[in-house]
Amino acid sequence: MDRVDTVVIGAGAAGLAAARTLLVRGVDVRVYEAADHAGGVMQSVHEDGFLYELGPNTFRVSGPALALFREIGLEAALVKASPASRKRFLLHQGSLVPVPMDPVTFATSPLLTAKGKLRLFAEPFIRRGDGENESVAAFTTRRLGHEVTEGLISPFLIGVYSGDENQLGAGAVFPSLVEAEQLGGSILVGSLRRRMRGTEAPGAPGSWSASGGMGGLATQMAMPLGEALRLSCAVRSLNRDGDHWRLETNEGEVEARRVVCAVPAPAAARLFSELSPDAARIADAIEFVPVVSVQLSVDPTLTLTHPVEGFGFLVPREEQLDLLGALFMSRLFPGRAAPGRELITAMIGGRRWPGAVDAPEDELQARIAKALDRALGLRGGIEPLAYTRHRQAICQPGVGHRPAIAKLRAALVGLPPLEVVGSWVDGVSVGDTLGAGRAAALRLMEAG
Image (cartoon, rainbow, N blue to C red; front, side, top):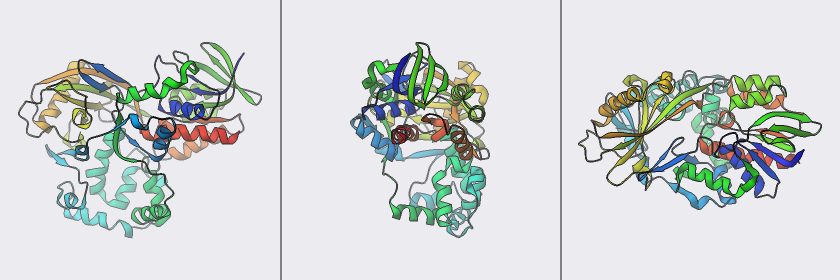
């Protein structure tokens, strides 16, 4: 039987982060990935002068993620979005309206009425509640008012989760806000107290990608692993063997002292089925929504009612369109579009239209074109480059998600060292997942 100190199951963002963290510390690590490529959904395409993503387009560099990039020597590979990316829009009553990013634009924004703005300022005087057991809608409405929830929070969740504020859990989606309320009695006071303590590692502000796209970043993270990265090699079973682990893979059996499980929830549920039925049940109950990402080459010389500028725009459900939002990728990062063209990424599906993942391309294009016409006045001059269908695109952490994950981890206590990480465990953003992978590796090393 083959033997290795630590096995990482899955070479997505979390798995690569864990493996590289172990590798730089001299650990004998091996990574098994069922797909034929590393990076999971982090995939980029270079074609006909375009560089576009098949998965996530940008990410925030959290403090833990920044620490990871620095210690594995990839900080220089990161590319920050242009300063214009601070300009973001919502489709509001048929027109693109800037999202307020400072006190001046907030005061003049039509997204909230004067009453709604005054209600927001009353937040420090609202009594403490139990955000962990509330939906995002219940928590933000209680603390910030219904106008903020409907006008700002709901569209934000469309962009991040493609989900519904009435179903998503506040504790999982806005953990820092829920914890701030518990710490200070209000979001404002708690946030100020936490900042004064200075316990959070600073990240890099803004939105980021990499010089070769997100897929290029994954490739750079994977390269030093060499033969320790086994692609197209699935882990079929995970079993305890005394104080070690025994894994059955496509290449045969392998024994490991420690394991990082960094696979999607359905795959984790299968691995845990005999090991811990309770853990398997929790993983199997995690919900996801489907999303279709469509890359569009656009003629920039067309006359538009609104220019292609800034980060992009989101579409609230009140606009009664199927499009979730669009990113102006060629305005965010250099080298993303062929000369004389713009690159726009359109996102469609989610809770709003789950059937999008099975819709024919001409129907997807028609519904996207309708929304781009209303938002930008864009008629014609659109050439689809790629349609990427993700059936289980984004985790939908509901009320009680964090306690459920805590129960999953508790169900695995008493076994040989094992860490479970991934977007369904630690947060859907790439930055959170990278940081969580690093943290999981460090915990394994501390456990001995």
